[in-house]
Figure 1 (cartoon, rainbow, N blue to C red):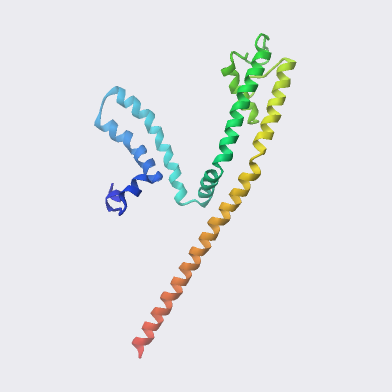
Figure 2 (cartoon, rainbow, N blue to C red):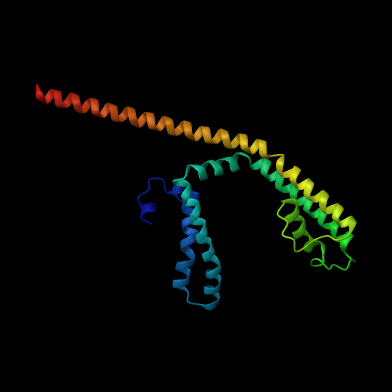
Length: 205
């Protein structure tokens, strides 16, 4: 609150993402103190999870996090396309594997109960995680599973070159800004020393 009142640009202060995170983290506590209702308290317990958003305030002090956020912002079109393709592929392969495994008596793993249930297997397979609680056991299901894993590897590898080049560009940009800032600070320090020496030499005369 003190920072809000002393800030010159109130609207810019309110729109700052880091300040919005502060508000979201503080509001549940004040609501709990103001309304001692059981339903409100239960809701605020859920809202208190928003306090974890404060970890994003570390971006003020970490160049690595700044580079990651700027890279994600610059590659948002590529990342959105990747997520869309992964979602479509997950739906397709979960449907195919469910149809292949629907009437099979599974002994090695849990059965595929429905397409939404199989969607969890598809996401884990496409992202090459593979937890193993759902495993296709028919030949057709394993064929679809192999295709799903290979497609996931290819889809995730495609945008890596674009994201890595953007990451390198943003990292060099931040380094360049830091070097310029250091040169300006060094020049200002040199100028202050020169002015101080001139003043001292003038007083000596």
